[in-house]
Amino acid sequence: MSNSSLATYIDTSTLNCNTRKYPITRITIHHAAGVINDLSVFSSILRSGREVSYNYGIDNSGRIGLFVPENKRAWTSSSPDNDHRAITIEVSNSKTGGDWPVSNAAYNALLNLCEDICRRNGIAQLTYTGFLSGSNLTMHQWFASTSCPGPYLKSRFGLIANAVNRRLGTSGASTSLSNAQANALLEGQAVNAYTAATTGFVDPSTINYEVLDPYLITLDRTSPDNINFSRLKDIGVVGVLIEAGYLYNSIHSEVTFNSPKLESQVQACIKADLPFGLYFDAKARNTVEAKNEMYRLSFPIRLYPPALGVWLHPKLPGSKVTNSNIIDTYYKELTRLGLQDRVGFYCTRTELNSIDWGKYQDTWYLWLNDHIDTVSDLETLLVPQFFVLDQSSIEEREQEFIEQYGGFNAGGAFGGAALGFVIGGPVGGLIGGIVGGLS
Image (cartoon, rainbow, N blue to C red; front, side, top):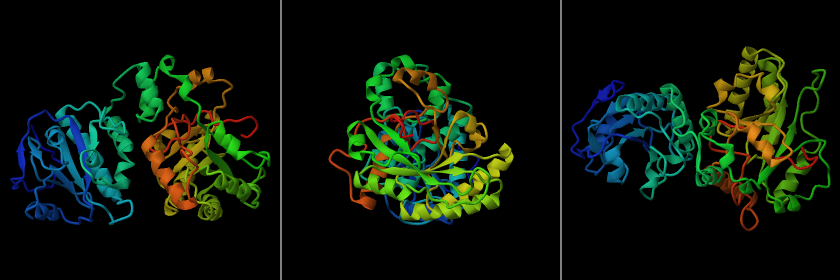
């Protein structure tokens, strides 16, 4: 059993470890709950008298240290059973408090280390379901009363698994689902739906269509003014995507950005306790125009914080290379607005062809605007763009909405399983969300 050659600092003097009982089949990621700028700090912690240890530590600059050899069980996760099976990794935060973020350097080092651990220990793929069951990428809070690994890393476990699996060249482990498994999938107990769809992991014949009631709707400047939002909730609508506007018209002249119905539609959602997201028509021809669009969009974002994120409707006329530069500009500006984990593309298949989706599937969501007439048509849409609800992250967004706007009606707007808007997985397509002439 070897150790990672990626470690540039080695201090395995701690006695806080045991001989490992089981083969290495898991990876457990922790956050350090502090900014670690030197790997020697991890050594100091091990000498502090605390009954704690870890196999690896990653500092804020992305340097990796080895502290407990892989053939030893570290004392990290408050669970001997987990630690006997897992390589445990402590990752420095880039700042303290808040969502406990980590630097890009530390995050990239984490991906490299996870890949290396998997390759050397014969772990064919990392799986993360959002629960201990079915996951070999595990987190501390599953075994103890703790917030570790912090909101930032926790929200990226699905991304981490997907990124490592692409490097390993592996995908889904199953080729079909039982009825029970399909129901669990649609209730949000699985992620990595891109892998599921591309490998045939989702078998349409096993889906319980009875659980497909909740959905989202889209509203734009042409939507009727007399919408009964309370009635929408009664028939299963769990959220609304609202047009924010556009800066360039059909002849590419600048116009007033905001949709004339933006304020009224947002206020109606707030009154009905329906969470909402914003989308805008992206028409920039270069990065300067993209910055102008983002400047105008920043006003409605600040005025109406979108619990369901910001969605880009790409109407980009350039080549994929040009469009990639424009999209990178959008992402940079949206990140400055605190939306780095809540941005997506809202587009048709034709519009999707104008962008390099493979480049963005780790950081952007995808709402594939494929209208369907009947539930049976859903089977034709189980393609790589398909994804499902991540319930744990929806609960986080629900809490944000409660804090921002004072709450939901009894039961919560996100009650039940929903096929549609997903927060928490990097890849997918939103299916459904269509009500009559509302979208």
